[in-house]
Image (cartoon, rainbow, N blue to C red; front, side, top):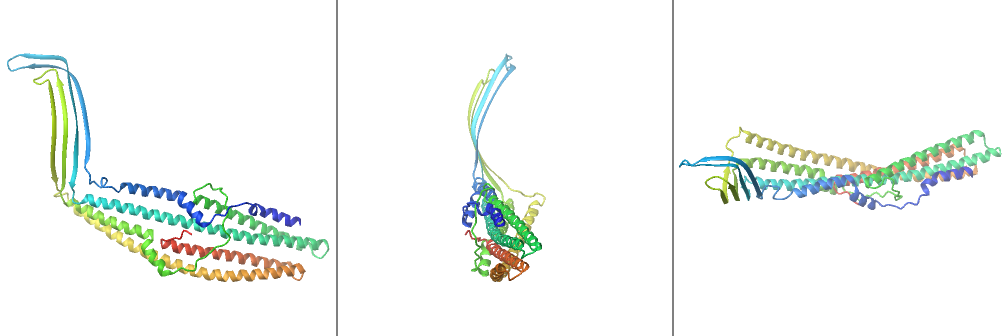
Length: 433
């Protein structure tokens, strides 16, 4: 009884916690709200959104206000035509002016419209990057969540092994006391119990580490306590053709490559715009006033309104125009190659992941059957051990087979779930459930 009590005390720190169960949907919702990576990328998207305006593209005029004031003290002597001489010592002069001016580029070879299209493309690129960050984060949350489920299942299997080892040790000690078992059987049973205790402690430590990692992904205190569900549900309604179509249309990496191709095309259009003239209009209105103590005019006031138009065109710049156009064309070619490369890479990833998914489904069925057989064998062996009709080593072997089969079944379920969510991540449509 003392041995069984010690085993109960060992597993109580894990079983005795009153934990609220957090569903996968709740975990994903928390991550989308608080994950730091998503928040950082969202900020970049907000900046790109703010940049999309016609003023940033150069379509609007610039208007500025100007104010100036000046004063001076000087000694002046003037000789007039009739020979009269005038002089002023420490004479003061004052002048001030204020006004507004406008400058507006009304034509620049359509480059301002091209820049506006580029700004919108950059905004779309930011949104694609945000989608990629969301997919990566959701993938991490889902994989860590089901890793916790797997660790929980492994802990349960290890605890069962520990309880059976405690029962075996108690039985061996009772039989030793009445002379029906040797000291070697007691020692062997104690060694196996210690081994199972070590395995349980290590399994619990792995569970706790995964627990901390998931809290980190959710953007909350890493010591927040919570529980997870007990089972891993694997979707078997996955069709490769639908995933491939979705990947071509929604994969954010492919979308980013296509957007960069569009940006390079706009860059070529922007460079070619330098071949056209640039036309600017300008105007200014200024009021000024000046006063001096000596001169033909001691005071003056002016109201000025100026306007004009200028046009300029590049005739020759050392063949730089042609070089820049060639470089822009090479940029388009490189971006096109990258789009094809990314598309083929995604198709290869998807096909590989789908094959892995199908293989893991077979493993889940196989390991599920093995676990059921190992469970039945364990039950029969336990009953025979209670009756004393089998040796302790046979009992230990059945116990080990049950734990190993349980571990392989849990791992197969987890790997199948990882393959499933990998498929949806590549397709750009990771389910939020």
